[in-house]
Length: 124
Image (cartoon, rainbow, N blue to C red; front, side, top):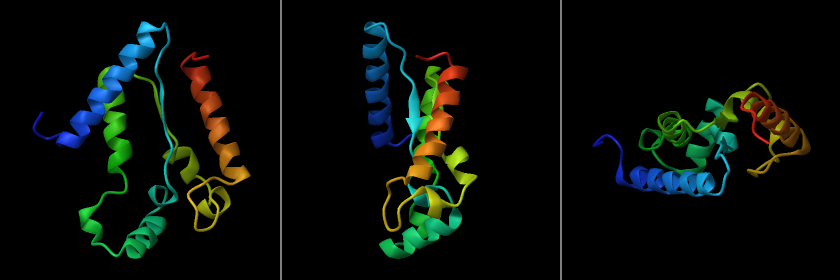
């Protein structure tokens, strides 16, 4: 597929192999996408791009998650994108200031979403 850059084709091959290895060991692969704070809101994205000092048109806030979600759909792999459940909250309460790590509140939101995802997909 010419529309997929080489680096993403390589990433997809790695994911294919990971899924094959998991299946070979009697497991089922599931993917959980963990977003950086700048992937949650447009305001966060703008601050991130300004901090980087780059032209925002040269980057994509959503593309990394979208590309992995695409692979999940094609390969029939369960995928939870935490952008959606995290976006329902103020990122200031979910991430530490000037840090990409979750606060206890961020961990709580993620844990609830992962628990629901595991039950929905009947994953242990």
